[in-house]
Each structure stands twice: as C-alpha cells, then as structure tokens.
Length: 201
Image (cartoon, rainbow, N blue to C red; front, side):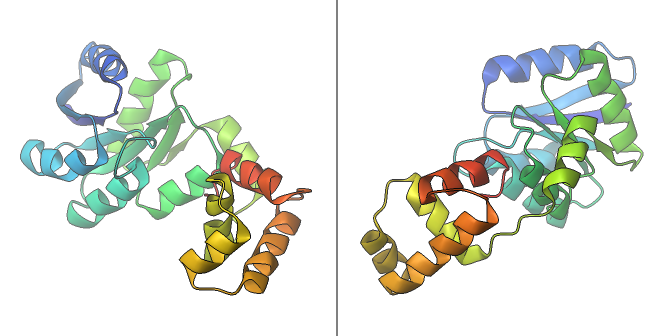
C-alpha cells in the first residue's frame, strides 16, 4: 500500500484528491494539510511514501516545504501537483528534491499512475510542461534581477528598491535593464509579468 500525504491550501481540492486516490486499491491517504509549514510535522507523524504538494500556499510555499521535507525525510518521494504549470517552477521543484511534477488539469487516472511511478523512484513530468521548459530553458535571471522584478510587481519605485536592497538607484536601473533584455520585454513591468508567468520569480 502506497501511503500519501496531501498538501494543498484549498480544502475542496484536498478532499477531492483524497477521495480520488483512496479509490485506488493500492493507495491510501494518511494525512492532509493546508499549508507549507504543516508538511514536515505531518510527514514525521504519518511517514508517507509520497507527498503530493501544491506550490501556491500561504506562508511557506510548496517548493520551500519540499526542500525541507527532502532534507529531513529523503525516503519520502515528492510529487508536485499544481495549477501553475510554469517552466521555472519545474526546475525549482526538481532542485528542491521533487521526483515528479503534474498539473491539476491532467486526467484523473494519470494522478494514480504518477503516484505509483514516483513511489518507485521514477521521475514523472507533465509532457507539455517539459516541452515548454526546453523551449524557455533555465531561469536566466540573477538573484538581484529577481529581487528587483519582484519589487516592480509590488509597485515599488526605483528609489524604494534602492533603499530596500541597499543599492544605488543606478545599480537598480542596471539590474532592471538586464532583466528586461533577458525576458525580451519592453518595460520593467512587462519583464516582471513574463518572469512570473515562466515561474522565474
């Protein structure tokens, strides 16, 4: 029997996934949580074979929770299951120790297959997302470029960013210019949007 932990901040989604997986004769859901902070404590208690984790959760996101879980309980396989099938998320999930990555709009029967494969240590990646990742490649943005684009997305001015990041305004503008070039955008706002859509932020 494959023991599964579910982590998703939407109670209805958690319930639907649990019901669907519990219909499988060889899979049982042993725990479910609604935040990233709860993943590791629940996993330590329930000792699942597979943790099915969403990315977008309040507080600690699924990628941070996955990295923490992988470090503490490396025998627990991690399968990311998210609405946001973004290429950058795939690379970050694999770096965090995930064995698989599927999107929530996949056919229901595919989820059980993915859980079984991941439990055996076989990597599983949504085919469309894998293709998109090959097209867009790895995240080209430096840490600083990501920081300034996040700040742009929050409506910060160059002066605000410079003060918060302890940089000169000229350095902030240089980072923004580089990020605009790497995202093939025309403005910093467009660059922030492109980076967000590709999962680079």
